[in-house]
Length: 273
Ligand SMILES: [Zn+2]
Ligand SMILES: [Zn+2]
Image (cartoon, rainbow, N blue to C red; front, side):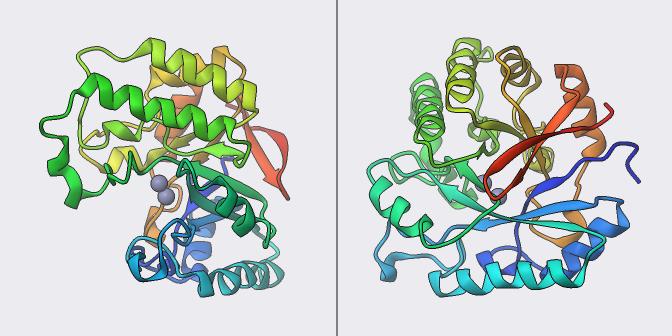
């Protein structure tokens, strides 16, 4: 059991094609860990590709989205001891803003998590596309990644920016942490009014470290950027994954509160940290 109350706002289910578990199993896992508020944030259907190009192992099908949303509402009615939130993890693909606005306009969410998983079509966080790192200039890759992250924040589509230094996933790192990029990005987050997501999935990958790094999180804190917490669970036992580490991360960066959302409205929750 956790000493502090933290919600888990980044949970996937079987709907996205590469996670395991029914929603009920995630609820049971949350209950067992003493987590009383969770948000599902499955991957948005790949609206930016033609239907025949969409990979069903990467994101849910568009026809499933209505069912996914209805299922969360149905489970909320049946499980009054927990607070369930309706979220979605949304790829930011420059040039596709119109389609995205049209897509999102059809549904109601508590929050939207914006993610950068693609650099010019390169799925840099996919194990199968790791070979493409070879021969690239790391400084240029980092600039491109953080540039897109800023663009995503300023696009106005999102409430939260996910795993904001995902580019380190396979331990692809610069000689020194790119503090100037962190500064620019944190300023963009503050200007856009988005939250930085503390995502513990970084502890399960070669990087072996929470997203974002402590230095980046401190810069966010200095610029008044609110934070949310997510496990990026892809199986039920990952709900609240290493939240003890998340508590330490929040504490070291000077955060005492996390943000909660309801119907895209942000309010703050004192964690007691
Ligand atoms: Zn993601
Ligand atoms: Zn995710």
